[in-house]
Picture 1: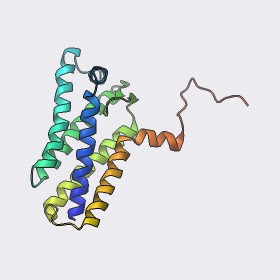
Picture 2: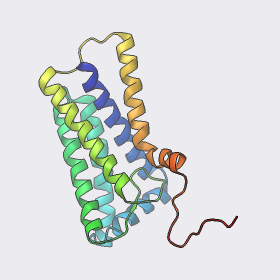
Picture 3: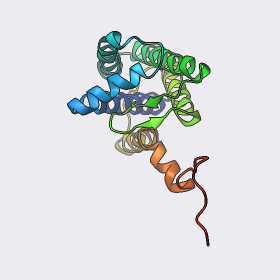
Length: 186
């Protein structure tokens, strides 16, 4: 079970790190993220800047706790709670029928929908599984090189699926048509 804890930890570190870096990479990314917070409909524009800083700080703190604190149970719990708060904020806006764009990983402007909620639920599940693995079986002990390599591979695939899920969906389904788009005449 050491590999389960290690895979969960590594996947969350990659996702939180990519999310934080994506939001602060350029001045345009920082402003776009701040404005996406305003678009939630319940956050005052003056509060968006401090909240943006708090979100990025929390993402980096979760990654740090998962990397440095041993055992990582506290990092897993903080990650699950943080993701739950983010999902609750998005849910509140969705229930009010506010169309919100997701700037979760910086550069992409994606309308929040079922895919983002499913992604957050999967990440919460990863954090819970990681915490349970540590609680029930302890932290990762000595792992063979092959086991460690396979664990890193699984964590990377999971993280890439989260980071590029929209692109993968586009490849499988193609572009979604809106009500104003019509199929091309033949």
